[in-house]
Image (cartoon, rainbow, N blue to C red; front, side, top):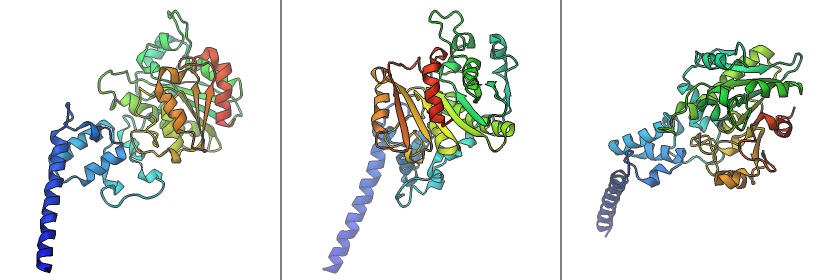
Length: 351
């Protein structure tokens, strides 16, 4: 009787192994497109994708999953223990793979410097392409309040004559960084606004450095730079619009200060709302600190992702979401409307 029962268990174990190997092979062979992975695997959040990677025994399948992780700028699932016991309770910063984001910085020792003349369009275009990053600023003597501003996708995709001052643009939109900083300095706040330099790329959107890393890298470098200029008593507020606004999610988890995200990017960045996470990486929304999100009333009408963001954050008391009546995505960063948006930013910064 016991012998027969033991034999039955062995048979069941062999069948289970066979089914498991077939499942892996099925996932691998039923993939579509260049990735070789099926849509169910491709739609997994990074945390779950890492679990698949660390638990897989099939080397070919594992290689395909690793390529997908690389696309998401995740190169370290090893130290997460996701392949072992399940993590219980709230995540900490040590659990987040993006905590190692400095590994993929293009210029880890970058020098940040001011534009020689932030109103000279051609000089700006020449200078921003060099090593390090350039910024426009407006300084208030004796003030320890600082805004570090991160512009949107358009600042990388357009010549500064179009993005910054609306020269030759029939709508005359003005998003100049110097003008923006001057508005805040008139309110007693030091302002530094970096002009990023990585050109837009239509291909490989998910892994593009400019979309994924540069804005966070700028925040990191400017934090060190500002502390050297203003001392340890400085009060920093990280502010950004669209693509730059999405990177404020990152700053709210890892950088000390206040954080104001204006119309955070839904399309042009992987730093976006993913249910209970801020990013394709695993930054849990519960890790955010001192975060305010400003969204124009008309934005959800153009992109349902903003409504998802608004609805998803309703249950989180530590994140403030404010809707700006009558405003769309463009108006939220246009300098012509700083008198409406600026005070909301200052409130979010607690200045």
